[in-house]
Length: 290
Length: 349
Image (cartoon, rainbow over all chains, first blue to last red; front, side):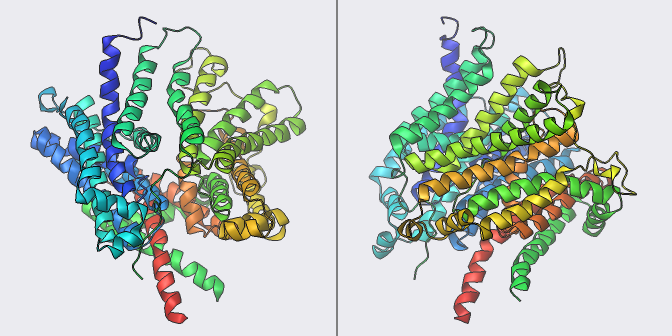
């Protein structure tokens, strides 16, 4: 066991947790406002692609990151328009965004770089290796403060818990929900950018590999609260780090079994400790003024 | 009249998606008209186009029906992907393990195992929802990852050919192969992978229709979906219906294994599913959760898949990923269309 619990694994736990945490904190804004965001996966992909492609042309990862955020905002805007303004089913539009982002980045990379769905590699000096890690973990107390100590946070929570009451109190539920979904697009996109211009040096097809869904699970696991969500992300990050570290260390246990542990754990926790009532009460319900 | 109305909105959604898709094609630098002619022409040519369109439609009919049955009970099954993965692995296992049985025993056995594996995998989130109230969307997503992990671990440890670089099981016994339709249809070459599973898919459409609209179980599932509290009051056990609907849904998704394992690749192969589970959601939506609609939508998506491959090869810049964009746009338009419908409904009443 000594081989597993090293300094190195703490390091990689934090690194693996970072994209999850960014996306999950984004999801927190959206879901606390009452909009399910199953599109985190697609929004991460949008951010990953746009930041890698623009970094390639601009030569600056910061311009790339900005482009990634813009792409995330654009994707989130589609989700917001469809399910806030057009009352579409939130899970369904989220799924549509995910499928869309499976297609758009690869379509564009094929056209721009004549590749089958990846961007050209970016030189080491043009990467942002650690910035998103600090952003992600610094955001946790900031999000907490925003959520529980500011008028915006109060309105956001009201829109997700009881939109009718919020409306009566003069809060524009529609506008708050747009803000929540757009924030989720920006943060998920930074998470995606960390993958393409942080951890690796290019965008590859479907490079998020389900991390958006895991972030969503972490958010639910963390009961839609910033600090608990961070712990859940660290747990998932640890599982990923451990499964890589453990390859061949414990004989007869395949890595895959270690990799699936957090998913099983999520299901157990959902069944045992959270129950149905913990989600924001109006989550998933379209709101329209009568 | 009712049928015309049911068809109108999906057709508008498709048309709108094609217009936006065409703009995307033009931006990327190809001719939209040429691209679409290629897409449609290659999907409808005889025999290759139609043969492959029907072949690609087959798994989508099963996953579309799977999602539709769950939808009718008010559940969103995002887990068809995991259900068909587990079913495909179990089917390959049966085809290897019971390979010495004669074909008339092996094929029904393998099909049965496909359905049971899918149904069991689908029932688990159903039970968790009924018993603990935990959301089926999250649980089915988690179970997609778990299914992929288990199937790949078991394949890797016990069922791989020595030294095979690809993550796939050994081939199933020849007795487990189901015939290709080319053997029965004149003019359809048997090199096309279109197989008996397509006929099973057609039968499944009819059976799901009968199940949902002509049996007590189906009635109870639909009643639960349209108003759970009224159903409960009327003496229906909502919890039981949730488990039943998810099991039926998973079983239908499991049928994909028949097409892939018994009819095409003759083995379990990691990543064999080209997003069938998620596309099934689009198919069910476009098909209005009705078996006939699902069939038409699956044929349409099958044609898109076939045509996409040609677009990939024969255009300068556009790749087959255009198909994902079209699918996503169609889902978005169909999903948002409910609003137009409601507004029009209000105006009428």
